[in-house]
Amino acid sequence: MPRPRLLVLSLGGTITMTASAGGGIMPTLGAAELVAAVPGLVEVAEIEARSPLKVGSASLTLENIAEVAADINAAFAQGFDGAVVVQGTDTIEETAFALDLLVRDARPVVVVGAMRGAQQPGADGPANLLAAALVATNADARGLGTLVVMNDEIHAARFVRKAHTALTSAFVSDTAGPLGLVAEGRVRIFARVARPSLPALAAGMGALPPVALLKIAMGDDGRLLRAVPGLGFAGLVIEGAGAGHVPAAMADIVGEVAAGMPVVIASRTLAGPVFERTYAYPGSEIDLLARGALSAGLLTGVKARLLLTLALASGWNRDAVAGALSAYD
Ligand code: ASP
Image 1 (cartoon, rainbow, N blue to C red):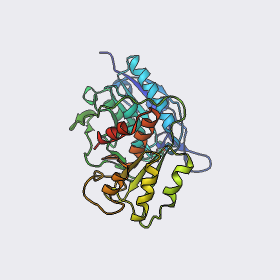
Image 2 (tube, protein in one colour):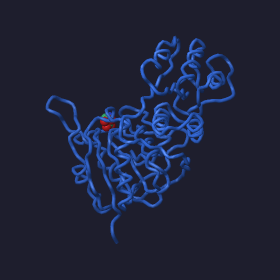
Image 3 (spheres, rainbow, N blue to C red):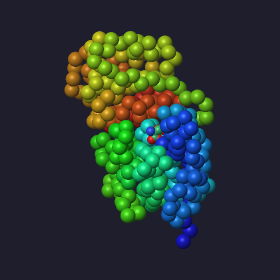
Image 4 (cartoon, helix red, strand yellow):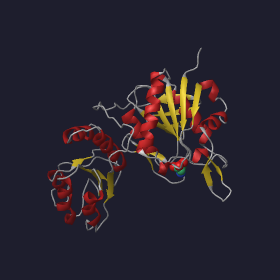
């Protein structure tokens, strides 16, 4: 039986890192070396390995990910059955969500990394890469959008989040839990999430509109918020406290900023929906929504920022942005 065709694209991250002369680890390995280091992987799929980048994932940009999405869409047009993107774990929750928005094919896209470097004892990269390849070539994983496979767990892009700096179990899916598991080489999908149907998003190949992300802390006096419009941003996501709240002293400024650009309210708790109709005090969710802010729904601030960026790049109006955000609520 012919093996499924799998594209493996490596962007860097701990999984590719080896000791550097000056101490510490640096991205050095490419996709072909990673694939060659995993016993059994060649039996899973016929792999085309490419290494467009070798960076720490905090240096990835949405423009980079738009190019990766274009490569994957082209590979699917050529008949590939799945794709694995190898990268650093620090920003996996963002890149996976961006790929979920930009690759709408039913064939699986799996993003994977490692918490331990390639030369560290107990390196988790090879096992994670094998599990990712098994998921990316499994028919049951079709239609679930982009997935993150880490520590043998399968997470949906919209829910997954890195929740620990060190543990191999660092990844959680708040709200939903993981969708499935890889054990004994078998992929089990326990839950399926519907992908919201969205108008087409076009990232293009140029620079994307800059969208700011601002986290609210107790006693914030609003000076950063007031500065946002003057800094050239095209939109703003506010990670508010609790169910989407800011200090009363900032409420007027939120309204002023929202009059000139889309402002989206997310929650810094990172789990649970932004409220719509509970609290009525100045700076509450009812107050901010009445002043023109939009709700991020269940999306975290970093994910809402990506959706808003791509929506602005695609020329969506305010209603279209609000509709897309509410599709994740
Ligand atoms: N700690 C990171 C990783 O897991 C570094 C990065 O995100 O590139 O790969």
